Length: 353
Image 1 (cartoon, rainbow, N blue to C red):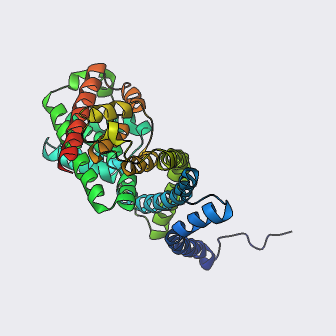
Image 2 (image 1 turned 135 degrees about the horizontal axis):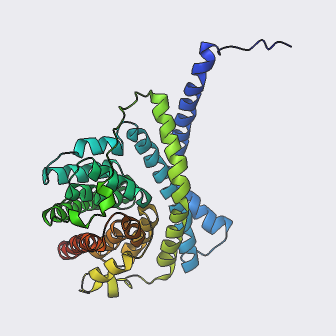
Image 3 (image 1 turned 180 degrees about the horizontal axis):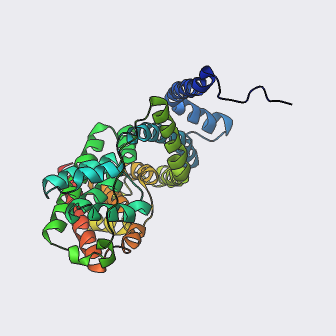
């Protein structure tokens, strides 16, 4: 039997799907916005009416915190990843490499740190990014400004900080994170540590970057949805675990208990927070709920910021990955310089706030 439908699809059939995807995306955004406004009432009703827990009990407070924060953070994370996924279709790490190639230090460090915020990456991509940057002629110090800013001052951290603490703390984190990335990269550049990069890295020829392909808005929305599936699909478990830890702290740790060893009066609190953060493997989505709970129990803001920065910028797993391209002395210099900057931030904000 001859298939009567062989041949190209009618024009209306080819254009319907993108419009349907746009409509579904718009409806999902409206539904998520409506749900977000009712989360507190839903969490309270589930905790005390459905589960029958006693209001004011430690377990009840912990459960209510968990049921409220998990959907809240997941919704915030999904929204920002979707938007950033679309924005990344305009701007990629390859584009950042082109902009930074041949830049002088100082101005290059500032631009590198700013581009790091715009093109965040996970620690697993640190090595290919490092190789691509240095072989394209980006100075070593500028490359490190990018590598420091990208994981530490990323869109997830900023949006969650804004949603949970307000614009002042989000702005403080942005400013201090950028400052550390710029100064640490500039210092590494001044030390002339290029000889401590593994020799095989310099032997790699920089590959040419193809011109950006013009994309339609349906394509960019599809990329945003793909980013949600990829990123949220990977980090949601960290969110749940982080909030579970935060819920335990919120419900069971006495008020002001954390002030005894994470307060501004304990001089050793900031270096201890940095040391505790380095071996941890977590991202901003998982660590910020813990930060929120610590602050609620009396921990000082500077100490908590130092802890969060050390987790995101000095994670031990990332150091292991970077060892593939850097010799131990350069890694040690990188850790020492960034840790010194984080300590300054911690003590500064414990003093002035």
